[in-house]
Amino acid sequence: MIVNIDRSGTVESLEKIVSITKSHEAVEGLMILSCDANGFAPDSVNGVLRDCDIPLFGGVFPEIICGTEKLSAGTIVAGLTKRPEVRIINSLSDINIDYDRELDEKIPDSESIKTVFVFVDGFAKRINAFIESLFNIFGLEVNYIGGGAGSLSMQQKPCLLTNEGMLQDSGLVATVNMESGIGISHGWKKIKGPFRVTESDRNTIKTLDWSPAFEVYQKVVKKHSGQDITEDNFFDMAKKYPFGLSRLAADCIVRDPFKLEADGSLTCVGEVPQESFIYILNGDMSSLVKSASKAAAISRASFTEGHKPDTTLFIDCISRVLFLKEDFQQELKAVVDPGTELIGALTIGEIANSRKSYLEFYNKTAVVGSMGN
Image 1 (cartoon, rainbow, N blue to C red):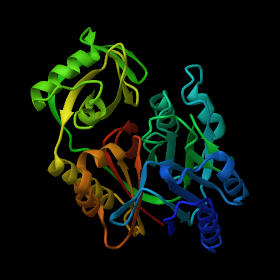
Image 2 (image 1 turned 90 degrees about the vertical axis):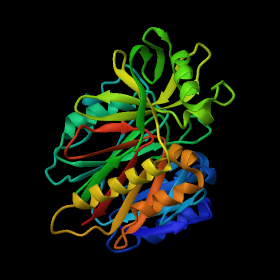
Image 3 (image 1 turned 60 degrees about the horizontal axis):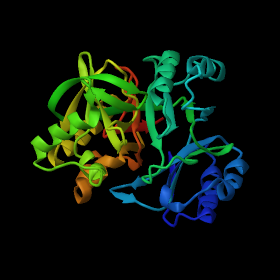
């Protein structure tokens, strides 16, 4: 990738680095990773996006990654040397949309697709259904990498960047003939469970073993931490105690509870199916940093033989940053590959698989992509 970085976060600087990057003779498409603190809005940014005469895709995230530094303002524009085909799926919360049909109609068959970039509005309510449909289209034939865009304000707003402008409650799929290797690991450990999800509504858990979800969660967290968890400190405590969604013969999928509802339900980033089984998890700095190192090692080992990556794309959960605080620097160092440029986004959920397992929407998980031609 041909990478240019702006640290100011202004629309004028975005326009400048888009122009510089797309003018490179080898660049055929753009991936744009931007910070929420830039304050980008459709009225100010859509002109820049719509004027771009090559395909572009990306999103607005709580923070972005540049080398061993995380940026709270600014933008990364990465030029792809293979042309991406970008497709947009709207209404990612609508229970009446058949995403299998939508994707089948919009994405043409192609044997040349090797990597699929997937970005979604992280607060859409049917991300899992969309991801399942995407896997139905491509299966294990390609690598997937991406994540949820959005803001730590927890307010849904336009956060995806496309040639059509900024979008919300949508997903975008960029298919490209690019070599890649993907590594996934989370480092969280089970402390209690499993609990049966006896009532849920998409991404909201209502009851566990027929008791109010928060009542069950509160008891486990207090016993483990020695601290009460209340409405006032819920977000701060919950970042240390995610859920783990059980998977047959595989590591659990982490679900991040981010909102305590008035009725004692818990709303998560990502769906939690009714009648599934979940655990309550916990971790520490050492386990999380080791997991990032593991994901990086897997991505390099699985990169296409005979090719060499030029970019490391790190998709990491913003809640891992909130948990690790100053120790997040250790996680960044753990994924550095001296032979590549490290860029990335701190996301509202992560999307990946590595041609070996089911495609998933993860939370609190480190996803590392070794990318190149």
